[in-house]
Length: 256
Image 1: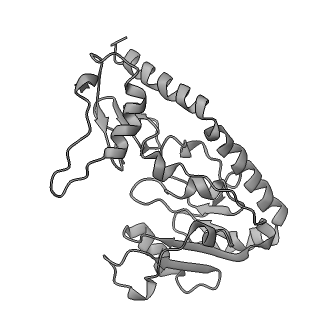
Image 2: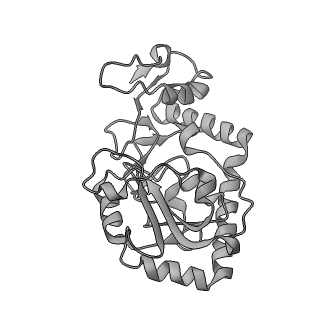
Image 3: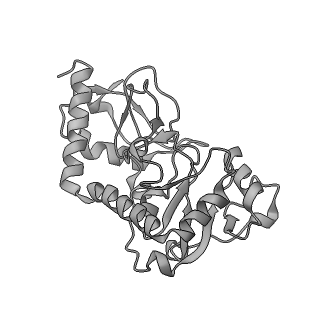
C-alpha cells in the first residue's frame, strides 16, 4: 500500500505497460481524499484475488473476492454505449464474432464454428495463429449491429464488448461469466439480460435457432439489457458510488 501523496502516473519501462488510463481513472476520485491515506492498486486484467485489499478493474466472480475492490477503470475502452437505430427484426439471422483470438477458450470456439452457416467469425489479430484463414480486417461497431447476435466471450478477463452490445438492439451471446468489473457481470441473469450458451459451446446452434424463431422473447431480453445499462448512464450517480466505494475502502482498512 502507498500513501495517496505518492500515487502518480507510472513511467513506462521497456516491455511494460504504463497503465496511464488506470491512473487517471483512479485519480479522478482519490484526489478527494487526504493524501496520508494509503491504498494498494492492482492494474491490468486481474483474474486473481490479491492478498491485501486492492483497487482493481476486474476480479473473479466468487464468494471470496472481498480483497478485490472494484473501481470503474479503463472506462474509455470498457464503458461505451451505442444508439442502435436498426430493429432486431430487421437484422441478419447470424452470430457475428470478429475479435482477438489468442486465448485457448476463444480458439476452441473458432475451431468449432468458423464455417458454421449461422456464424460470421473472424480473427483481427495477425499473430499467434495457426489458422490464417480466420484473419480478417476489424469491423466497425455499426457493421456489427447488422447482426441479431453478437458474440461476447471473455478474453483475459471480461468481454470488453459486452457493455455496448447490451445497449444495442442485438443479443449478447456468451457462457456465464467468470469475471466481473464495475459493470457487475456477476449480477447478470442468463436468458434475461443475455443469451447463455454452455461453457463447452455445444448448444450454440440450438440457442440461436430458438431466438430466431421466438422474436418476442428476444425483444424482451433486449429491453431487460437496456434497463440494466440505464443505471450506468447517470454520471452523477456513478461518481457518487465511486467516491462511496473509496470511502468504504479506507474505513474497512481502518484509516477513517
